[in-house]
Image (cartoon, rainbow, N blue to C red):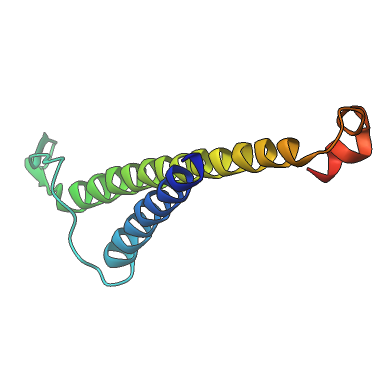
Length: 117
């Protein structure tokens, strides 16, 4: 039972990681736009020459891409944790099966036997 759940968790974790990689590839290589989360208005500055307007389009793009990268790194880490949980479930099941197959209790206490597990 744990082995099946472990393999499912590994598959889900790998799919989440591929989703993160694919999304970052589309944004950074194919130059697809990201969802606008930050919208800064143009800034007006008074100076000796007069009023100056500073456009914030580039700063908006930079902030949105930065937030997207942070989000995708978080999703990537979550996928890695899910896959690691599946690996641990499979490992525990394997150790449990190996301990059940040992013939006598004296072999359990030997360090060489435990290292082989």
